Structures are given as structure tokens and as C-alpha cells.
Length: 146
Image 1: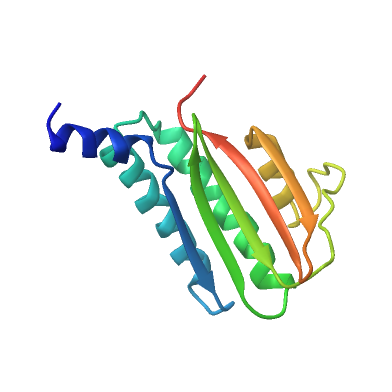
Image 2: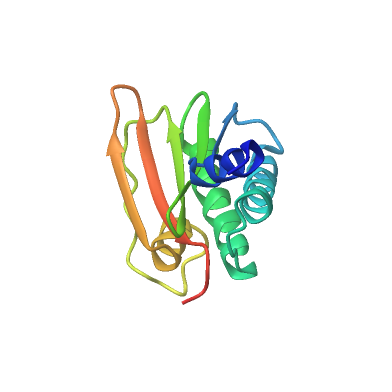
């Protein structure tokens, strides 16, 4: 086997991950969605994995909702981490607020505050935990449609 083939196999087997920090400035949420779009494009191109258009839309939606909550409710910086794990992307958002979010009871008459409901409905899994500083929310989205 030649060196190029070995390097290609090594790249394909490595975890793909990207991390970005945000300060809660105007445009951060749009930048987070763009980070997700570029990341999934890289997963599709470099790793040769199927990434459905629906998965791309869902990952961008999850990043947008979790980062919106971080910018809206947490003082200070936030961090978005996207990681390819097997057949899904794990979206992790850390922020400085230790208060854990709680999904409200579905209410079609309520204006706003549906973000966590949406995230939980479209993700394969969702978890939140306190950190020594702040909290970390993690959601997994499948790359390919079932």
C-alpha cells in the first residue's frame, strides 16, 4: 500500500471536529449556522460520508437554537463544538450560566420560548449538565435520513 492511500485511510478514520468561541455579539448566531454548514460540507467532502440536506438543515437549526439561548441568557462567552461521531454530529454548546434550561409544556398559543422543545424533537439525543463554570448542552443529529 502506498503512503497516499495510508494517509487517506488515516484521515477518514480520524474524528472530525471544529470549535468556535462567541461573545454574544450581533451576528454570532448567523456565524454559528455558517460554521455548521461549512463543517458538514467538509464532512461530506473529506470523509466521503452521506450528509442529507435535512441533516444539514437540522444541525444548523440546533446550533442556532442553542447558541441563541446562550447569547440571550448567559453573560459572557459561549463555545460551540461540532464533532462527527459514527453516523451523527454532536453539537455541544457551553455557556457561562449555570441555570439548566427546562423545556416548557408544548403550547401552540405561546409566542417564543419553543427552542428547547424543537431541539429535543429533532435530535437523536439531548443532554445538559452543569460544569464547574456554566453548563454544557449536547445534542446529536443523524447525518443521513432514516
